[in-house]
Image 1: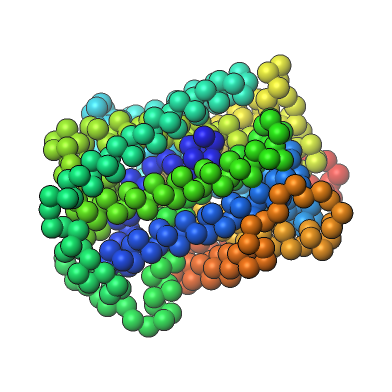
Image 2: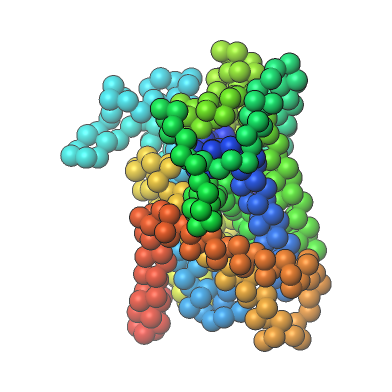
Length: 455
């Protein structure tokens, strides 16, 4: 439930619009989701080996530190705190508030609802609700793992059933129409779609790779956070077995749902409506086609349930990374302390503060390029770490070994590296910004180490 719940947030309801604009056909839209699913499953089953070797809190931070050196681990932890986890929590919180606006007009982000306007800064009630949501879930998780686990299980089961319901009704409706056949008439002709109906063909190999990489930003963002379960390894029963199993089952379930949801979209909506859904809310347009006017409210409730459960999983898992870093002397000292409920309360609230500040930007889409680039860089490095550790530490017990080793891990490394390179050229601003944030961790690490005290 942590794996699936952390993965399924708001992305699957939104990002298919941008993917479709980049690749321009039904076949390539599904291909982008399939290739993302393959990469996610490959990474997840590879991580199973690492989680069985180091079944303790910290997850990816620990794997990078053990495979390479403390600097590699710190760079991940720094990036995780500065943007990966906190920005994702903020984006999901903003999505919750945005869809709550369907029921409470005061939460709509328009000039009538501005609370504070200072220069270019505008504060809306929706942003405050996002912060309240994050603070509430943080508070629940300070009370111990059981409360967070109950929320995670309840909300994840609810949103899985809701998504399967939406997909099922969509396919029933599609059986009565001809939209599916129309969308597959020219399914493998890649093109860039314009809002005015223009379609620019894409044929050069470099341009095709660039279009796929640009499209995959949204699918990778939507498929991220599956590794959150490794951060709470110290609080899981029989982690050597259960983490690897949960990684495989969770990512498999979500991959099936994501591909099915996109097949449903192109079953009930013409491709142009998928690409240019209002504010990219593809699922809202699809729900309207399936349920009529009530569909808007049905999907709004689904997304609120989805984002609530997703943020709980992100908040629950994230603080365990800072806790482990602090134990190694590479984070604020107080983050290494546990409260009476045996959870890192200070780290939870520190994460809450950073995520709340990021909520004030109110921007969902701008974070995707940056987050997608940084997370894939570290996924690639971590999977390289499997090869390093097999050479460096052959003596460590490996209750579970990476499936398809060495072929599948090598394929992931090649695909992930190609994605990052293509993204730097295709979307240099935010991908470059993510790279800068990551590299800023190098001087911070040496300053902390040189001063012989925790930052």
